[in-house]
Length: 92
Image 1: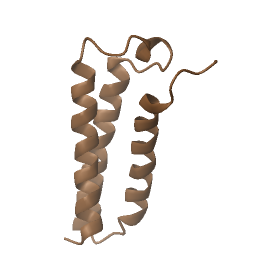
Image 2: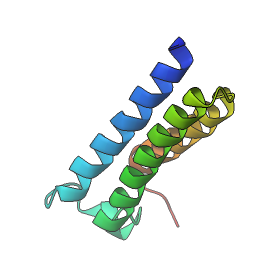
Image 3: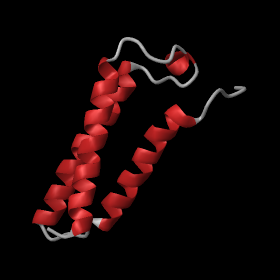
């Protein structure tokens, strides 16, 4: 398996695990839900996205389809998910 495929699958699974674990946390930053709208449901959606990306990358590899576009979109999803925690307080 080429490195980009393996890296993409591992990154997708890491996203899924991290989002699932965060969806189960009851305590955390009190402003996460009110300001950032990061509810347990939204974390579970990101977890499902991670699983779907891992499956899509594995299928693309098995069918000899290009995986770089999938990895690029996955990188954007991971950045969007990560920045939802790193923005800090906003005025709006």
